[in-house]
Amino acid sequence: MSSPVFIIAEIGSVHDGSFGNAMKLIGLAKECGADAVKFQTHIAEAETLRNAPQPPYFKGEPRFEYFQRTGFSLPQWKALKAHCDKLKIEFLSSPFSVEAVELLEKVGMKRYKIPSGEITNIPMIRRIAKTKKQVILSSGMSSFEELDEALKTIRAEHNDVIVLQCTSEYPCPYDQVGLNVLADMKKRYKCFVGLSDHTLTTYACLAAVTLGASVIEKHLTFSRKMYGSDAKHSLEPAEFADMVQGIRAIEVMLASTIVKDAKHMKEMKEIFEKSVVSVCQIKKGTVITEKMIAVKKPGTGIPARKFDDVVGRTAKRNIAADSVLQKEDLT
Image (cartoon, rainbow, N blue to C red; front, side, top):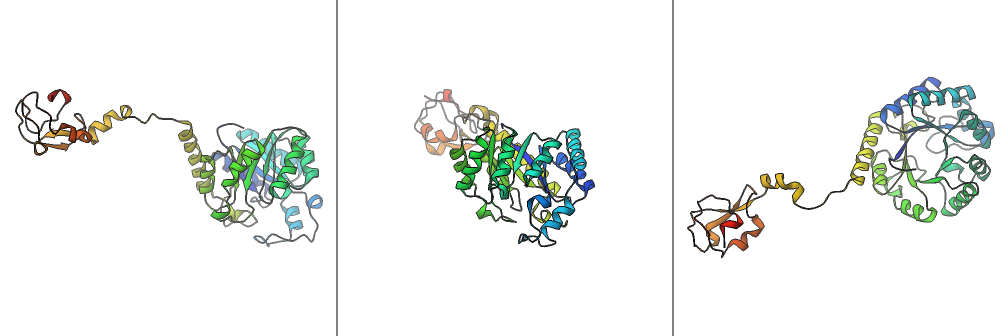
């Protein structure tokens, strides 16, 4: 992973099982400037019991039924991938079971994103690692000990891994974002790092980029009023597009250096700064006193900061009132 920052539009289940909405969301992510669009591949029978509890932020329907209702068939997943290819935006989908990995291998993905809740799913992680594809690992529910085990499993096959700081709270308050963890992860795992953000604004993502994040993942929806587990914690299109523009602007700023000297601002300094000027006629040979001079625009003569140095000097020529003093005017 290298610059520019890789921006993932997390669709999740915002489509609510509508294939048409899923297709439109791919186009929306592209319009907003995302590099990749990411879905979730749930196979209810393979990943959850029917009586598994619902998350506190979404109790609209039982999880098993929800995953069944909002899932897509293999032909549909392939069609979504083809649409991404056509629009030149990368297709991603997080698997939640080994069976989902097998399905996605048939669909075809450049890399895998492992969601926070699957960090301890070592059988699935092992299967993903054996594909030899890059792994983006989200850490929202894990300790460093659990992350260590997941990384060890992946690195038994290859070393192409990126770790994302994430806090699995929906929404995530600012004091729980954990931007400090980015540096800890980079040092501990010697890899690129990023942020999967669940706050309701773009601020955490922009801050993460300034701290060296190489990947940003953020939820995208048509509207936060949509039904489902993800929509109300997502960015709407204008917000997501603004975040992308902000990240790209920050990249330019971080990559660009300036020399902090006066030369490159010469024209502006001449217009806005002040020079030492005469307030009265000063005859040749006169010793200049403080009452004879002032500081006024333009900044084309002896700089105002040299005012005290001019006091006590001798006029080398006759100087008219309201003249900008130059070095050659004095001895």
